[in-house]
Amino acid sequence: MRAGGAGWPAGLLLAVVAWLLLVGPRASRAANVTVAAVQEPGVGHEGESDGEMDEDTDNDTEVPENEPSTEAEAPEEVQNRTIVKEVEFGMCTVTCGVGIREVILTNGCPGGESKCIVRVEECRGPVDCGWGKPVSESLESVRLSCVHISPENRFRYMWKLLKADQQPVILANDSAVLEVQRELHPMAFECDTLDNNEIIASVKFTVYTTNELQMRRTTRPDTDAVLVFVLTIGVIICIFVIFVLIFIIINCQIILGGESFKYRDTF
Image 1 (cartoon, rainbow, N blue to C red):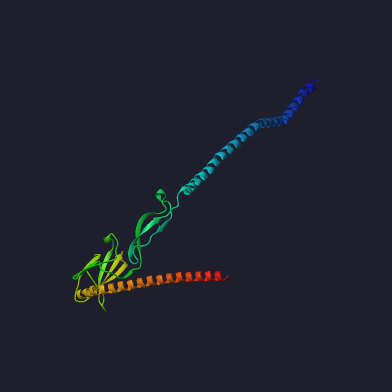
Image 2 (image 1 turned 90 degrees about the vertical axis):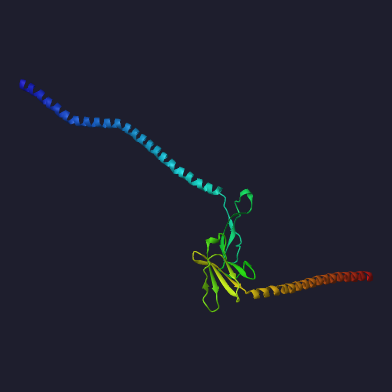
C-alpha cells in the first residue's frame, strides 16, 4: 500500500510536467500573438502618420514647382510691355566714296513723334568717283581735295601724278588737300582715300595751264548767252502754242453752239 501510494504522486508529478511541457510553448506563442496584436494598431498609426508626413513633404516639394512658372511668365510680360523700335536709314550724302547718312527711328520716339533722328553714321558707295572739280583755283595755282569726311585725320591719303603711257608718280604729300602750281602743260592728278590700307574712294583732277584757263573763261559767257537765248525762244513758242490751242477750243464751242441753235429754229 505504501509503495503504491508513494508511486502515485510520482506518476502524477510526471504527468503534470509533461502537460506543462506541451502547454508552455503554445501559451508563449499565444502571448506573442497577443503582444503583436496589441502593438499593430500603434504601428498602423505610425504608418498613417508617416504617410501624412510624406504627403506634406510632397505638397511642400510641389509648391516650388509652381513658383518657376510664375517667374518664367514675368519676362514674357516684360517683353510684351517693351516697345518695339523700328529703324530706317536715310539717303547717303554721296554717290561714291565715303559719306554720312541719318538713322531714323519710326517707332518709339519721345513725345509721340512719328519719326526722329537717332544718330548719324558712315555710308559708302562705289570707289571710283571719276573726275572731280578743284576746291578753288586762280591763274597761278589750284587746290585739290580728296574724298573724305570729318575727322580728316581718320583716313590716309595718297596723291599720284598721272602720266600718259607711264606709271603714276606717288607724291610725298599725304594730306587731304593738295595745292598745285600751274605749269606750261596740263597735268592730271589722282587721290586715293584709304581706310585700314583699303581704298574706299578715288578721284582724278585735271590742272589746266594759265592760257587754257583763260580760254575756258572767255568761251563760257558766249555759251551761257546762247543757252539763255535758246531757252527764251522755247518758252515764247510754248506760250504761243498754248494761246492758239485755247483760241481753237473757244471757236469750236461757238461754232457748235450756233449750229445747235439753227437746228432748233428749223424745227
